[in-house]
Image (cartoon, rainbow, N blue to C red; front, side, top):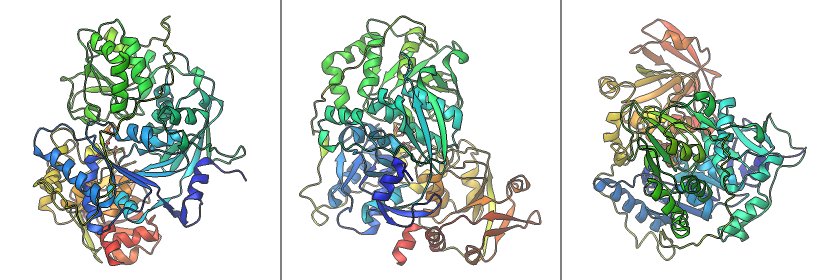
Length: 640
Ligand code: MIC
Ligand code: SF4
């Protein structure tokens, strides 16, 4: 029987377990990446594991999220990460070098390898034919310390692409169409694998746009084969030696199949406030636009920005629009500066901002009250732009640029304007933004720790009787941005969980943190896909700080579920989802014989206030049970 590409790479990296969908396996991790807003926790945890050198082939620490240094906090975090990187043989990418995923694609990703990153958009690397998975920080720290990662084998969906995109339609429209079909939970427990004649016409950066936003499907990862286009891309980055061809077998069996004819697609947009709320630009109509933001790890490649520069060439940005552009990397910015593309954008009235995540994570450029903001980013969750009443639409670079000129959401399909093909160029590299770890070691490099860096909270082992009170009752698709909001005000406190915890669920229920302080042990009730979005383990650590011991939900997003378990918080799934309706805020719940019940098929929870019992599924692997009993992953590792 033929094999999928995903399973071929997993098989090559199998350390323990059987490669059957639903089984837990351990795989060897070749590379890791961290960024600064999750990185401080990762490196505090790595230090707690007391290792000498990392066990991976390559580990990179990027600084790209918290680059707005309005106080000492962010710069202190950068200095901390730099010192730990030196101690353990980790490559350090300085602020200003660019966005982690774009940089990793350009410089380090390799077909056939595995990459684990403490950022949910790590699957960007799938555009190069690697298995690139986003995970919680502790899982990445363990992967650095031990070189392995435990994962439940996902099913594999095949997306068969045929035909060729029309001018003004781009890779972003492909992934928006897939989000329209599958929704933000359609990829949970799955790897999305792309095949078909259509992929030949997609460059590696187009493919990376598609695999990047596979995160929004909830997928474990997404992957394209490595082919001639991959070789071309690696050669343009001066890395042709890293090329190997790799693809699925012709007769590979998939769990599901979707066919998409690229030539039938039109420009699309994800409407407020979810990446799967997708329609065509034409159907949405000519809405007036206040802000256009181009960049992020989804759409900040050289070819994306060259298209933008060519569309803006000789034109003027509409007087009511603020256009901001953040290039993906220093190499791209340098190239745009040298070939005159940057001048074209500036002449048109674009604001060029730092090569960093910036507005994508609310680090500046929040739009005006009630604004319509078109963004080439990957998430449009309510409030993420930093303006609670903004309406954010996710679009392609082409749609963003033309709309910035007209001042309204524009589909330029019928125009006679031709978009030039972007030539393949050889990028000029320099290493001035990178610190290599050679020649340093743990003994001669002290950890540098500013006053804002506080120890992370640790849980206690699971008690035999768990008495919990419902501290929050939420609905479907709660995001990690809802749980632990992130913007320029809160991001500087990513290393200070006690402070950050005061803002937990702030946008949904401003009383939550104070309520928790009145309750001993807290339970949260959630709907479907609880914890979708970011990999930030702060969405587990802040609740842990507030005494949350269990989340009972209809279903969970993959990374957040792992983060809860790593923190020793029980993520329990309703056996019968009608029980969700029977629970109310402040109900008192008891789980008797909690430890023993982890051996049963279902876990019984008594609702003392309402006088009934409900069942939760016991869907934990043996390793997960051990971590829950120990009160989290670090406690478990230390107990071995
Ligand atoms: C995001 O896009 O939400 C982030 C910010 O990159 C997060 C990581 C974080 O919260 O630090 C992610 O996607 O994992
Ligand atoms: Fe940065 Fe935005 Fe990408 Fe997250 S999604 S890594 S914040 S650019």
